[in-house]
Image (cartoon, rainbow, N blue to C red):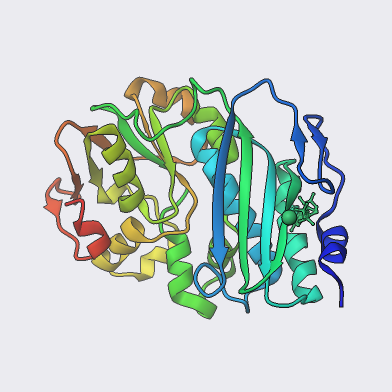
Length: 306
Ligand code: ADP
Ligand code: MG
């Protein structure tokens, strides 16, 4: 039976690659050199709530870091390092090996270093804190949207929610959108200093855009026909499809606002932007059908903004 220290040494201790990490795992604290402001963010995943103890541990490792890096993307920050607080019911080495493999696969993709953490016994849960470098005057905050801005999203909307609904029937590409979300780091770095506001879509478009509207003190109109949808949505009826796209969480795409003049510039570097609506002086979120008529949708998480 490996001890807490064996687990840390075996699965989580790697030499930090970034030059700004002066001291990594092994001491009472890590030390980071910095000339830049830091963006700092924490996200926790609890077994039975955010994932299942039966899920592929490599997917759980990947997704734990992905949702944390997604917050860096949404700030326009360049992720540098993270810490990991792991609570485990027992030392299942197969699970630990898979978890570490999936987590480091994504960490290596963005060259972010694991610089410390904590390992305790209890109900399975994973908490990470991410640190990213950001120009504070260019950071993508929620409170900068202006009336007349375009409302845009990256990628497709609702794929993760559809995959969750289809379960084992979900095609592979769709299933991976749920199990292996790609944090939109590169898009965030293009948008920083250009977009007026941004958020990552973790709780669903309506709820997350709602946070921008609240912080910015404006409203918005969305055009249903412009919501980007992958081919798998064709099998769904209109209202069901719209609900899923507006309220389905876990996509980890970016929703951002931008002055119409700036769109061409970001379109050159981000290939999958969709313009889905505009920011209005009128408060609240209104959803329009292809005739421009306001539609009301039944879902409760959504009514709140209507
Ligand atoms: P302390 O008792 O001083 O808090 P710990 O025994 O908890 O130290 O941790 C020893 C070292 O291992 C520390 O540098 C800590 O950051 C690191 N560490 C502990 N758990 C993890 C983990 N799950 N992932 C990465 N580093 C960890
Ligand atoms: Mg400790």
